Length: 278
DNA sequence: ATGGGGGCCTGCCGGC
DNA sequence: TGCCGGCAGGCCCCCA
Image (cartoon, rainbow, N blue to C red; front, side):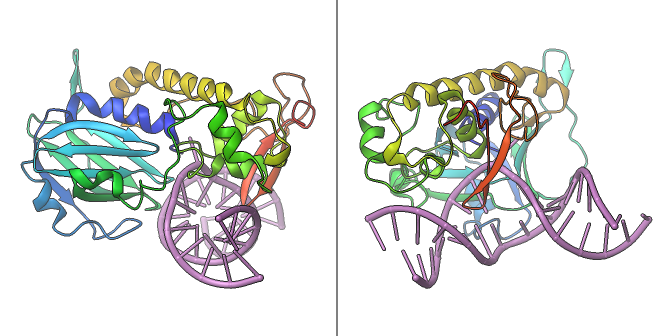
């Protein structure tokens, strides 16, 4: 699930329990996720205080007072659960351990942050804070779609002379960092662009504000449900969001009523309205 | 250099 | 009920 808006929602949910707080203990329950977990991870996290919790693309990064930075990626199925947290009069007790609880952070003031990932496409790493931007997972990423380096000129230039469907190009993290399968489908629908259109024959400029809007709206939707989630079950990362095309094959296009179609590109599903998107 | 396909994992859902 | 294929919001690697 987690694309940029969900990851940002997770980060915001973690802020009150992690930023400025000390990790009393970390439980590392297996040696690897997608990659081997860093050597002596539990020892390197024990007693560390989180100075700041930030995000780059779909990665959450925690700068620690030990001089290291913790990187967290949720992959496809990664979830984070906060327990032992009190919001108003509502207290979350620590639940029984669940299958696939791979890493648990016991915060000094009581809350516990549990990373659960059934498919283990997620990842964690530790690196010196000074070298964060050179990390192999981060140094090839394109600009943040909500940042100043992402603009009409940039996208037009990057998409020119490419013989690839626009769908694939927008999923390419080297071009834009943070979009995933859902939001690319939603962006293309809002833009009226068929997912199979080649980038070379697509006007890139109008996509820029649409990408920003779609992501911003999703972040706001995540923010508005954050409190509900924390007050109900403490699970971060999945929030209800009404999609216009994603997952709606056969259902009526909300704009024109035409049935939404599904097509497979590079092994990924693309959902689109054959009438609105050309 | 670029684009496409395979692979990594587990879970769930629908059909037989 | 059980089994099987297809599907899943990500991303790295290899090959043409």
